[in-house]
Amino acid sequence: SGGVVGKCARPDVDVVVVTSSYHVWRARAIATVILGSQGLSFIMVGAAPPDAHESRRNELEAIARRAPLESNFRCLRDVLRAALWVLTGFEGDSIAGLAHSQRRRFRELHRAGHLARE
Image (cartoon, rainbow, N blue to C red; front, side, top):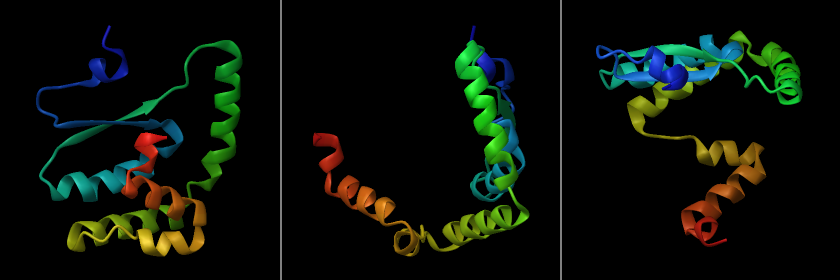
């Protein structure tokens, strides 16, 4: 019992970061900036999809499609974004909203409290 996190939890570690196995290296870089800036220690755990036959196959196919998207550029971009947030508190929502109108609308609704009522 306890699952993956329970098996990995250690008293000398503040945070267990669980993410898709293909995403571990980028998540580790981001966690180093964000969690490290707060003095938190962490370990990374690559999560595997559940062992249900059809859903596992679908998840493995989705992972195979997304894995090549984990580029050095994305890692560098996200580390710089994390450092900017640590240093200034700026989240980049206004910039991201220019390229992703649905994201901007979702955040506007969320901030207005509409999502909680819908």
